Length: 286
Image 1: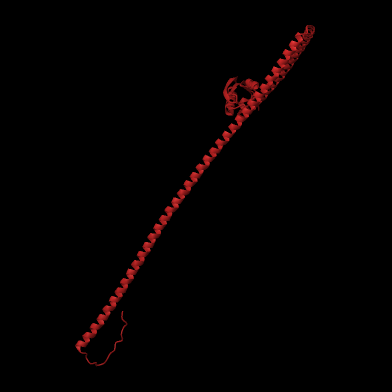
Image 2: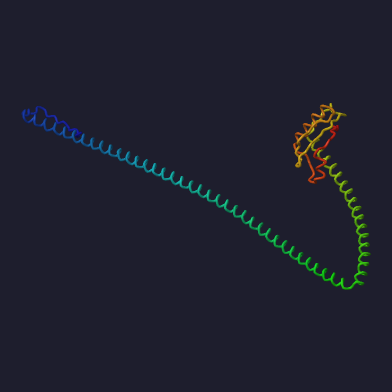
């Protein structure tokens, strides 16, 4: 807006001429309208500049959003590629491990085959040497027989001596057989005692295992139950049944056996044969 003007007052001024007064008013109005137009133009320019600035900001924001989305897609693609590479690497490592295991197995088989081959060659060599020794022995025996056939008297005497020697040898063999039989009987007796001792030991172990799972009750005092237990080769209980006795004790005993599932058994075949079907007497101790 134009700056205010100081109004000048003149007393008893001379009246202006009408035409000059109208011209002055017209000139001032034009200046006002011109100034208003300039201000509107400046305001419009400011609005256009602000609108342009906002459009630029929106465009930059949109570009930034697109760049961010493109970066996100790039990072996601990189992550997928990384995971794919990790998966491929894991699969390759697994295949390599499997190949190494197969290679180790093949190497072990080859070593075993080589060992068997060497053992077979050694056995064949030993058999050939033994056969050669037998052939040489037979050859020497045949030569000895031919030589002795030429000397009748020496042969007769030799036969007599041989007969006597054989008789002595038979006596010695008989004595040896009797001695071996006595030793075998002694060993059998010792073995039987060992088996009996092992059976008793494993019976005690089985009783101890049953006692661990046995739930006692005061009502069982002075009572007992006989059980029949059948076991597998690994000690697995295949059957348990009562052979008579107190019902409460029998139920608790069979429950304890079933809870144990497996019972101690000896790896010795003879001992196991006496343990696979055993009868036990369960008497709770208080």
